[in-house]
Length: 290
Image 1 (tube, rainbow, N blue to C red):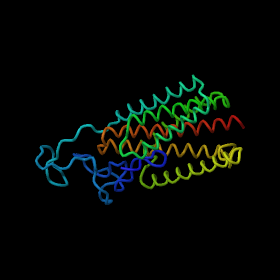
Image 2: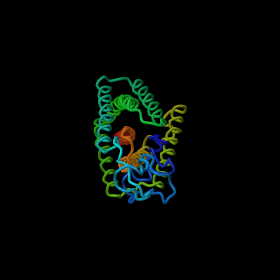
Image 3: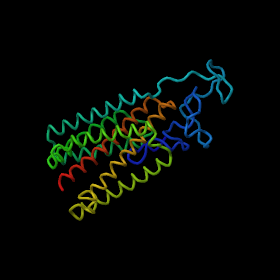
Image 4: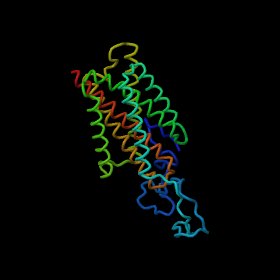
């Protein structure tokens, strides 16, 4: 069930080729119709479906000709995802507000950001979601965002609030586009987004190294007109990762993922929203400096 690295991928397209780690077979007691990764692609069955019990009471198993066992409880629902995401984002916002109110030094903020990155990577490569780890990530990420938001606010007054509104608009726009199927998430889409995400992060890392050792703005990818272009690319990539998040949630609910997977969905949504927020914040600051 790998990789769930929320920067480069989502949980999925890894177990036998099926998406979200739940694919391709439907949850026990459901039909296979509508599954875009059904067994005619040669993928393994749904790992979360119950095995057929020939002696249990219930409806017939259309594939085996035996009665089907009752569906298990403890499956992920949309309400689970909404509540876990609300908790995670709530902690992030509270921590950001505290960092802003306390006027924490920039060094402390970047230290908190480094801790958040480490916690995020640990969760990304764990086999199961750990709520405590995800919530700790949210707190440290919030401290980091509070510090950099205050710093950007000195450059462009009101930029953080504008970035928050912009992030909400992107979220709603991607959700509407996904629900209306203007965005179709499949394996080709996932591979393209992951490759683009890796390339973007590596390019920004090179730019950071040039800035650290050569001074100035490095290769100029984060300032001026070029900075605006790469900021827009960053927002588009963040929006694409949101679409992957929505697909993960949809498949998790449809194919009967365990309830604990809702924490991973909340984790992915939080990281995508943070990515979009920071890119919009950077664009606004550049525009106000020109």
